[in-house]
Length: 417
Ligand code: NAD
Image (tube, rainbow, N blue to C red; front, side):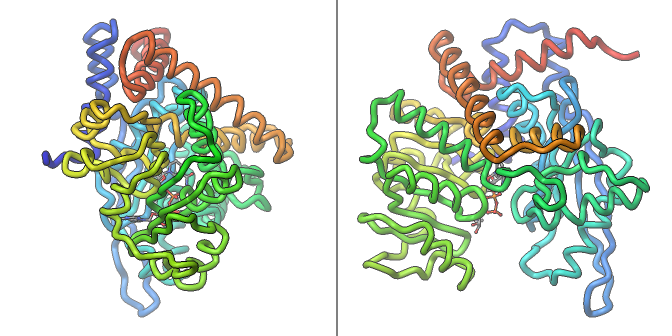
């Protein structure tokens, strides 16, 4: 298996699309570059009196179509290149679903599970202070990602407002609803993934009620995907988190699993109705109709892609499939719903939150869901249409769709000065 970084993956995916596109070399060169990455040191007074200095990043990949948009990840393995890759994916994702945004991403190298709530708050506030010169409602709008949540977004927006002497809320999305977050934001990524899964089942003539599902990652995205697909009558036969997974061919109850995870910190010890343990590696190789990677990057790669038995892969996570694996999955005829399409629901509702904050006028949950559904369906059909016309895979089609929009914006803006 070739070892590739998330940035290699993002670059290779872009090149594959550029090869098929009629763009001049100058434009292609600009599209290949990250506009800006800010690296910051974040000193935090720990509870024991010691000062730990954490490292954080904020990347803005391309802002031709609008302010940078993207989450902030707290993880021990976050690095400069990963944040750049994630910011690139955000650029293409926002373009696929036609949002007036560019792409950004942030990260802090830390293990949030080892921090007290006070340490986490001080870390979060100081991070926003350190990147405050490059963020703002019309510059760059952070949001949650792995191991960050609405509570962290509450600290972010308070810090931003304190620094600016304002009571403005459009600079951060994914906030608690009581602090002008949008209704429907918490479950939006999952809603979007489920929408694309249902459209794919319909396209492939698979009856939803007969379909089986395996989900890797049982966090914000994965747990809601399990619940929503279960509600639609699909059978969830395997799920996992960072500590390992569980399998039950008769089906798992997502509500009971969620409760178990809340009580014990993992799904791995869930035992009801003959449920067995399974490793994260074996989970990906289970016989099923739909496999949903909803954790981290590159989990489907050159070493295990040949063993994947799903008919559909719905990429809730960003960058879960390497280009080497993509080739193998294509040979096997597996229908991949690429990340920049499948998981775009989160940023779509973040956009709705931004619009509501700018207007100070708020929508019902029903309105949020209907508008999200319409946008996901339009993007899904557009990508499928390009895939058929260009006789290419869904990922390359999604890239062609997105890169074209970004290139057009760049063309009309020209180069300053
Ligand atoms: P989260 O922190 O809520 O959950 C992550 C889950 O992954 C946890 O259950 C964790 O235990 C599990 N996990 C971590 N390492 C693992 C491993 N090695 N094997 C198996 N499971 C592992 O994060 P989230 O918000 O649900 O994000 C998950 C993925 O979805 C990420 O790739 C993220 O970028 C992507 N995503 C999230 C959103 C969003 O709005 N939350 C939007 C778009 C994309």
